[in-house]
Picture 1 (tube, rainbow, N blue to C red):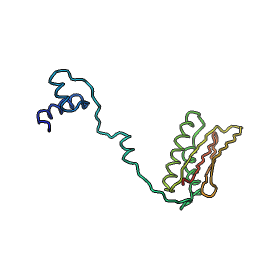
Picture 2 (tube, rainbow, N blue to C red):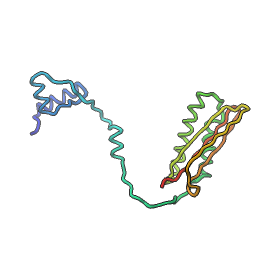
Picture 3 (cartoon, rainbow, N blue to C red):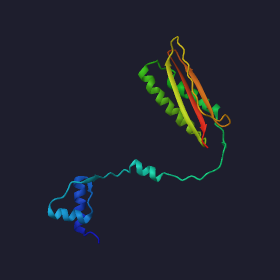
Picture 4 (cartoon, helix red, strand yellow):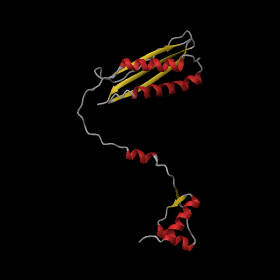
Length: 177
């Protein structure tokens, strides 16, 4: 049974007034409205799709390739150049300030990750770590461990120094089978 034009107009006006849609169906809404005791149960309405809707639409079912090794190896030399360029561009004139350096580590790691992803190396998981510290007469030892296949997994790192700070950027590339 279709709604009459009057009911459609009435529904459209109420939606425009409140900016929301009733949780009742058409018949329940008319009955409640006629008896004068409409509930204010509403659901917000927006034109933008929710993130959950996008995630459910973008799910792609992949088939097994049975590929055990990479077709294209990780270009460590190119990544070293990226690390050098990014660290030099961001930190050349900077002085060490703890809060600024804290934000810069996040920014630099995202920039490096984006530029390495732009190389379009298939099936590698990337881990980018950036350390920035004050350059006084102290030393620091940084270690990392990972379960790893030396045939396909690799890393690149670069150390930058200026008059007041040092930075170490590392990119780990782990092949995803």
